[in-house]
Length: 309
Image 1: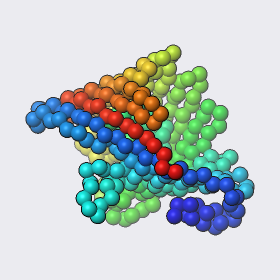
Image 2 (image 1 turned 180 degrees about the vertical axis):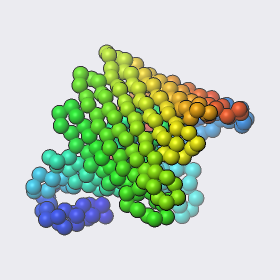
Image 3 (image 1 turned 60 degrees about the horizontal axis):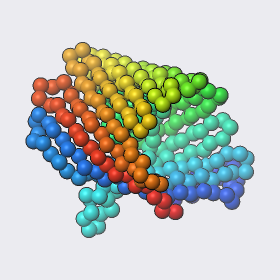
Image 4 (image 1 turned 120 degrees about the horizontal axis):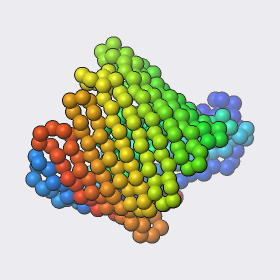
């Protein structure tokens, strides 16, 4: 279906497809044990699913130098194994696009520009890297352009909000860039919500600095959202610090709304077992700054990737 969509779009634009096409279907099973110690819930040990998924990507080369591209990724839930159910619990990605010398254009469910240029650079833990950050998830109705010139990467996206009763195509606009030189990445981005008549529009700005020195990698992101964007009574800011050393990683995130200061931290280690196979171990603490809701989490997860076709 997706290949037919790409070919149809290409023909509508007057582009003739060549015979060469590439398709890949892969799966990733991620099952682990977790222990949660919370002030509000008795300590709990369980085996859980941690983002198992199936991924299908395709690319077709056209005779004028353009390539049609597409990607589908669905989350799989092993607990949903009742008769007549598939276990597919959500759509993670579903986009199609074109790429060439001008850059890349994608439309569909995907990460938007703010994530690509800022948030994604500190989203390094296997589970829950950026709990208090904005724009750190996939969106459903995104039209995104990305380009690169030397060490400069830039991106712009527009997205619709499916919860907006007006169903406008452009509820949110994002712009951002990165500049990479000598192993250091510096980036800035902004995201602007439109006024939909019920909720006032708002603005988010963010920046990132990331680099490495030998085996040590360091990253810092900062975000500031006005009260309308944050949907709160005050502006909200957050800072994320990350560090890596070999297979060890650490993330610390703290938010500030004036009256509330949620924070969390993760310390993890990735153990490579063999081709397509690894385990990761994480210690995590979560404090949403309410009197009785702090958690300590221990996690050990096995991840196995394999090709289907």
